[in-house]
Image 1 (cartoon, rainbow over the protein chains, first blue to last red):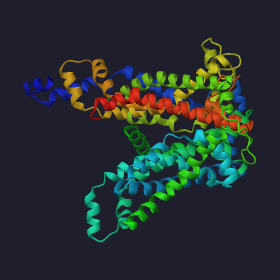
Image 2 (image 1 turned 90 degrees about the vertical axis):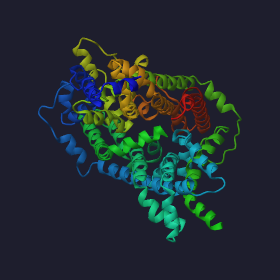
Image 3 (image 1 turned 135 degrees about the vertical axis):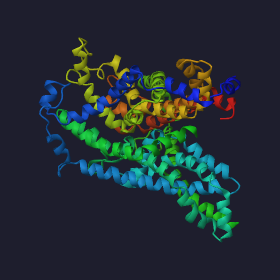
Image 4 (image 1 turned 90 degrees about the horizontal axis):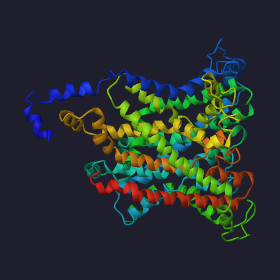
Length: 295
Length: 294
């Protein structure tokens, strides 16, 4: 209908543009008011934790909703001091997340390559193995995993014992995301490489790998965030000095329940790596999640 | 030909080996465990058939846990769908600070569930927690044992915290869906004199259907596996008022060494998730393929 009426208005796209500007203008105070409420509710608890770390327990008890006065650095300094377990947890979280990410990305792209670019009998059946893998969350297998890893694989309380199963459960999603990505690369590339005498393995190594950087970064970021935030598997497998940050936060909060300021300081410092990583990788994380939904 | 086979094997074997060792074997062991009475040491010899399933399915703590999971599934969608949609439509306008707003709304989603849980646990403390203090300022009183310590409120409180944590995901996904709506549609509707609200109701929301349905699927699967937040906030208490299937099976497996019961609970959890996933696929997601083209 409008397609018929539009040409009649000879000024063409101009009225549409201005109409758009008035209807979608940012001048509505109500919109800003709602946005402010959303921001306050979203950030309130986080900011309360950050500020709580700058208060003393006496301040917190006297006026729970108040601001720091005076500002006290002791809780933060205590968490960051040399004798604090924070750095050990941080190291464990980092190593486990890096190993998980590396294994997921390397094994994932290797498996996705023949599934995307080789023609062979049983290719779709092989791909289905990974699709079915999506149906099994780690939660379902958590108790046998705990028994197998500690008793049969002898990897209890080690970095590998957490990183490898995390990678295994992240692999199906990785392959499902990477395969269409690799399929989308033009076949002319492969033909040109063959004319130049490159083998299929050579093509993978020299052309496909460099070109699939963005896809690998996306699945890598998702694997890293998943590992960094993981709780259940580390809870069952890691004790003492081997614990990761989420375990450290949870244990600190129950062991020092009287030291509320200390709990806030510890929790805030544990948030920072994830937030910094998120801000740096925001586009990749969001793209990855949206890609997963478009499927 | 053999060379091609060898290459395929070389590329796929590492991933398959990892899947077998850490997914296939554990899942098979869970099924095996569920048929034995086993405390975790020595071989499984005490075969009990389906008795573990009978005792899980007649255990009120477990059946209540299934109900709690279903409440979380439905409650999460009923809370997050309208809120997420409203915020996404709001943020989709051209406005000052839009990029910053999008970043802020996504912050809770990036935090570990454990970290969010520990902060909320402090906020929700009875008497000296900030929520109770704010309620007192407007003349209201929180429950004496705190929102998390009172059986009537505990599950609802967990649901509210989960909404805070996961709303950002809904908003980000809906915003992505909105970007797929061609501008020409808006312009055409405006030329026809449609109001902002009419445009949203007749054009935007229907076109967002596929995104909303996929988000609902992800939300449902997540709610069925819920563990971290409950474990931190309530540990499943008070009086099992917030137990989920996952906290039940971890409790049975690690604290009581009832591996047979834990195995049976795992299998039941998997079957429930599978049945709901297939039903969702058949009755809700299938609309997308019927509508065709997308």
